[in-house]
View 1 (tube, rainbow, N blue to C red):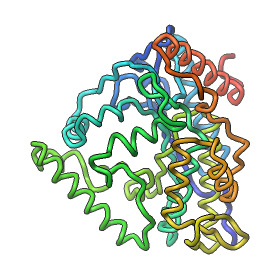
View 2: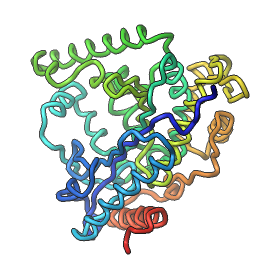
View 3: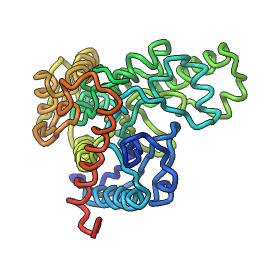
Length: 369
C-alpha cells in the first residue's frame, strides 16, 4: 500500500525576537502564558513557539498560526511584537538567562559562544518511520541546502555577513574550535554508526568541559549524548523524530510551507529506493538520488553565503523537489543595506513585526476581529 503523505507526523519549533513599541529588544514577559507551546529561550529577548506533532499539513498550519496569533494578541495588549529575523542585526547586547547548561557551554565554547546569542531559528521534526530512519536522516542531510529558502538576515552586529548570517555564525564561527559539535555531519550507514558518533562527540564535549574546569558530574547532570551536539540534522530518540535545525526564523507561512514540503519529501522514502552517488542529486519516479557528501557541502556553503542568488543552489533544490519560486527569503530583501545602525535596525524590526502580523491575519480570520 502506498503511504499517505499526509499521515507522517511533523512539528515545528520557531524562535522570534521580542520587541517593544519602539523596536527595542525586550523580554517576553507574559507572552509565555499566552499560548500552549510558548517558552523562554536561553537569551532574554527570544520567545520560542512550538507545535505538537501534527498528522496533516493543514493541522500543522492551523496549530502554528493559532498559537502565534494567541501570542500576538497578548503582545498587542502589552505593546510588544514578534520579529521573524534570524539575527537582531544591530550591535545590541544580548543577555543570557542564568542556567547551568549555558554556563557550561560558555566554558567549553569560550568567547565564540557570543555568536550563538544572536541567532533565532526554526527546528523541524519529522516522525521516524520504522526501518527508514537512516534513509530519513541521510535525506535531510542532503536537503540541508534548503535552508536558503528561508534565510532571513544577512547581518551580524550591524555588518553584512552572509545571506544566511545565522548559519555562518553557528557553523563557521561559534563552533570553530569544536567543529564536530556544530558542523553538518556526513551520511551514516546504520543507527549503530550514528550512536557511536554521538558517543564520541559526547566524550569530546565532556573532556573539553572538564579541561575548562567544569566538574564531570555537572556536565553529565546537564547533558547527554543527544543534547550535547548541535549538528544541524539529528536522530532524536527522545522524540522519535529526525530533526532539521538549519532554517532561520521566518514568517509563519514560509516556515509551515517548508516543514510540510520537507515532511512530504521524507515520507516518499517509504516507496522509493535511496541512492548516494554523483554530485547532482534529484528525484525520480522510483528513486531519490542523494549527492555525495562533499557535493552537498558545496551546495550548503553556497546556500549560506549567497542563498537563492546562487544558480547552483536553486537548480539543486528544484531537482530535489522544492518549488523555489514559492519562497521569498527576507535576506534578499535586505541585501545591499549595510551597515545597519541601531535606529535602522529598530525600524526594520518594527517593519518585519508588522509583516508577521499581516502574515498571520491572512491565515487566521479570527485574529484581530
